[in-house]
Image (cartoon, rainbow, N blue to C red; front, top):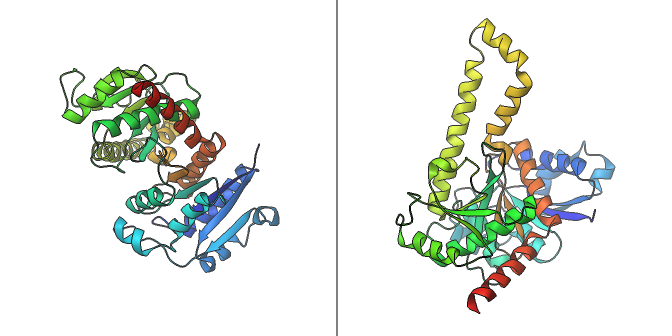
Length: 342
């Protein structure tokens, strides 16, 4: 397999290097072809590498900066004033060809703004979208976008999201003609606001996209479709609500397993199955949202991700870089737009 290099914004997120650096070491053990550029404060990074073997250390480059973007910093301020931040320099590594992808757990708004300026969008893409993979009842992954990068979207942008989501599903899952739906307040054709209605019209007249129609929130995890599209306002609330419910169910299940001798005995007998269910319900298992539509690969991790969750984000970046996702989206989108305009 071809060598890959990832640039990690190790200062981003709630926990910074104490989570990102150990996760990076784990990724090096998991992917022998992987090299890493750790972008951040060298004085904080170096002590965390003391137990790293020489073979792993040779695959690490440290790009020092003591400037970072705060989690509550306004994106416009970060864009203008934090040009030497770990986030900005990690993106610059991708732009300059030093890295094949960037991973950050930092401020989402700042990452979106910097990514768009540093890497720029692909031809035919007005705005990048934040997309993640979610579980379903039939174990078929669902891709939901946008998750908050674009709070307000017109019909053309929703259409672009649908195309990008479809290509992402094809590339990552190697699935032919994945089904795409628009998240709406009802499944009937007459429902929804103007933007959703117009986006539906565009998709209905695009045979290259396997358009399913409208889908409601209660069908999100049924596995009926492969890609669900919405604006960032709806998507972010949907995702955060789902994560909250998942954590509630995990908590309730764990509490229930502590009740009574026979329940504990049964739990011990069913431990492998219960562990699998808990892992599937845990949102950290699906950590890593892709900022697609850019001329480079950017993966956003949860700000409060632990080591295991951050490793999931790194793994997603490895997969997308290996399969050259931006090139795939660009060529497919260009083909579709040519057909529409011809």
